[in-house]
Length: 305
Image (cartoon, rainbow, N blue to C red; front, side):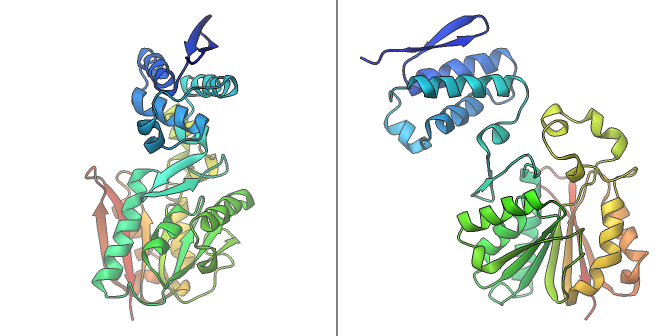
């Protein structure tokens, strides 16, 4: 018989003997705290603390929980109830079916950004380029999730990720190694297109686009845990797009595409920004794509031949 482990919870002690009990206990706490996905959060945290997979849990839900594991689960519980995202607590985020290491130096990848990956692949498929030796650039790469997700689908492509943060570049490089893509990637310091050579087939970016004055009103999970420089887009949220529009044209090959994630209601303004720069006479095509929620999430612009 497994001897239950006692851990302190809100002035009392809960006794946890096995994995299923630990998950049920956390789920109950999260329900009371009105956490949006209580069972999922509880399961992810417990399995991370025990370093076991979901499959392993299904096969052995009565696996015992040791004292140190119970203490770690309690620490995770406290952090989650304080509003810290599960991905931050476990240091991992699933994106495009891949697992990415994240730290406080990078933006926590969100499902909406998968629209950038999906659209990039669709455009390359449309133009019959997916099997070519393409060169991609990811501006403000953060964890590298955009670039690495694309390269996982493009067997002979290579790419460069650019970021102003050395810590973020270290995270992206680590993820490249974990995914076996280090031989097809390079991560360099720079502010948008700084230090970036010419002749890329596609440039992609998820720049900061939150208006400076509204950051304080964001959900605590975002405001308190994502790096501010990855959120703050200036007074109107569009500063990064202006900088990218001014510097990206010469970096892109003729017939190349630039894809930019957009905030709510920003897509048309982003196109106007590009039309007011060197791009004005060189835009062959401009498109707006919606995410899975129906929000205009992405601007795609094609350079003339």
